[in-house]
Length: 213
Image (cartoon, rainbow, N blue to C red; front, side, top):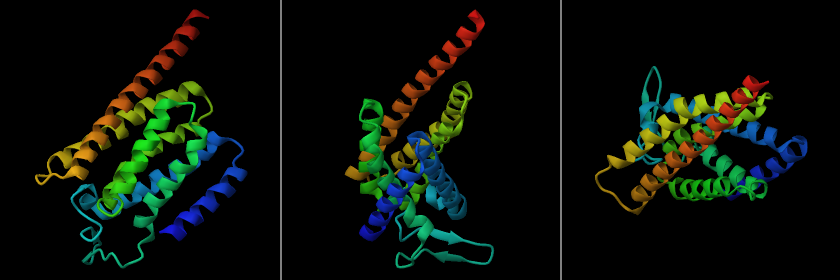
């Protein structure tokens, strides 16, 4: 794991040199994360949505057979996402210190990913789909970027967090980790509501300014 972390730190350093614009840097890597997460969610099926499924109980499905996932197998796509995500979050700390909300988000998600890595690795893949909203940085026109963010929040982020909260809530034998995940899911829903309201307000201002011209 530490070797993988060092590799990605080196990888991000090269990427930071290549991408002169930090927004494009975030857009490229978070979009890659979201696509990998989507691939895992589709490939592993409903098992990946179940937070009670540990890394040893996730099942691989195919048209010919169903084989238990073996923790000793080097499944790159499944294991790479949490490492990729944590490394990106740590790297991005230096660029978000002026935004308290984003800094708080990064701290919470870092703690969440670290604590869940060996327990709910499949669920991590599912939840990281939410990072696909960062694709908006590729959109040049700010109005279109805001529209995309609003649609993505309603169609992806809210459903993912509500499903996550529902799944953890339905676990009967609750421990501190389950309670922490419930709290984090609620926190993310509230934070997304705040960001949704901010983006909607900005979009209304743009439309109002065009009307007054």
